Image (tube, rainbow, N blue to C red; front, side, top):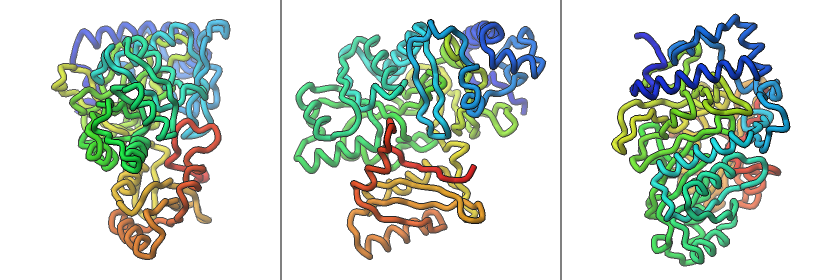
Length: 431
């Protein structure tokens, strides 16, 4: 079977638009980007020969290591044109600075405007933002800008503090929340403890960020089920990264995040940097369209997903992206078992005996992966310990190390200094 990137978009007019923007991008990079100018010269790339999406495979890929090691060489404008400095969270290594111009900030607003429209947003909504708008966090700023463009109301409350979140919900009556799914569980728990009837509240939908709420077949995973079983709200999953400056957001059908093709060219690549077919796992690789400050060409995100090209029953025919199967660099090989953190998190979320957790992976003295689970149990008893260990052995077929800690101790691990979202996975392996 011939592998081509054309399978990503059946609409000829959309493909033509992307190809026109791709040629503009290549000329822009050749003229303004120190990194890509050098990359094209080193690989004898003649940008005039790249005319179609299918031709992308002739170009070298860009990696996170490139961005980390040569961050400033990706900048295409003078510092006097930069308005905003954002940075990546540094989950997979040292943080990367992403500089945005005024045009980039407007593009970011357009991106989130499209995302909130996709997630059934309107000017009649009021969104409570349960995330940080500081710490160089692009997403917080993007949500704020997109909701403003939508004409909806915004409550900038920030992360954490369930008591304050509920006080504000009951006082201002938002219709929607933007939050990390595991924090929504904490809101549900707080409401139960304080006799707040959550289904009588004004909140009818949640834009979920930072964590999977679905399996790769788009059914709700344990986290998604726990939320919707307790709270009758509609969940919309999102996927984005600081580097791509663009989001994939679910519509009401919940069948994957929709690509915004005017903002991004999407490829899912195999180990040889060739496109995979629909339904096959591949590394999410993006080419930004319309970015002025730090555009990227065939940038490999490290995230493994599937894609789907069937027309969505919402009426959109854009490509849809599955939840993240895992991150390439976070794959764990433990006692002969291959494991990605999202699958491990799903197992831990299923257990009634576990209130909260952080998974840690490190290298043992012979360089093999070891897994340590920091767990807050429902109660510290031999019976609870026996159930947890037996369950892990049965589901994983291997026994990770388990350390029981208090909720306060876990909070210190999850919210380390300068972290913008709760840490669920700590990688201490020798690279």
